[in-house]
Image (cartoon, rainbow, N blue to C red; front, side, top):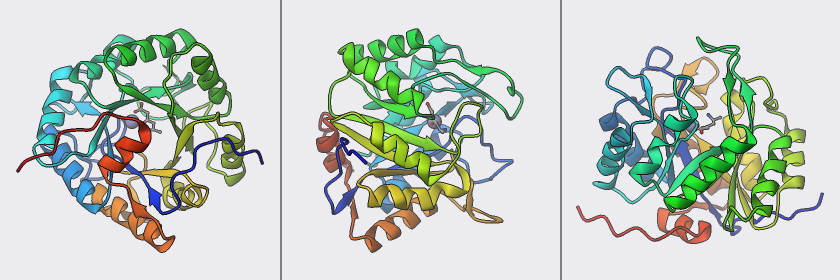
Length: 293
Ligand code: KMH
Ligand code: ZN
């Protein structure tokens, strides 16, 4: 297997926690944080457990997915009162949001934002059968807007064809190295690859030079795939957005519980979780002023 991607330092792993998402609700797991105050609390708890990056979705007062920059700004400000964790907003948004609305979060100046690298078809929930639109033009529009705001994209990869889109952005000079991708397996959408280790190996084979990867197993594969990704030199994403269970038949009690478990497993592999400052340096983000309490 040809390995071109950037490996993390052997004794380090950057943990991202996806706190809320667009699809999970308190009905599915009462611990899902929906309002800014709850999201900020979870972010701080997860930072204290070892998360370096928080992936953020916003909801309005009725808990409907929102791209309102003011809500994102409120979440950022609340998080920043307590810690300097890296703020990564979602431009995936939710099924109710237009492509335009999905970039609203950039006006709240996150440090990173998700960039979905292709179109998929939703298969669950009220929006089943509709397209999660990310045409090549949309992707280019998103990344240009991110560049205007000085926001670093984390490219969301759901199948092998999407790695081709990464290459296209590199060829067009729209990305600044080092690149960050989130290798996703097990998303329930049509067009997304199943959570299977062989697919994961294929992803790695086709990654470009100068590229760090995050490992994201959706659902029950979150922990095991995460460990596999760490062993191969990558980072890990956990959190209630992608997995509401702690183990079979038992709901996770919080995002922090999921972070704590992956940090324990990282330490068993001889890896310490990166601080936000360490992750910023590796990913080429600007330093954030020290939070004074
Ligand atoms: N839920 C993840 C599989 C985004 O928000 O832009 C993908 C995700 C995308 O988090
Ligand atoms: Zn998301």
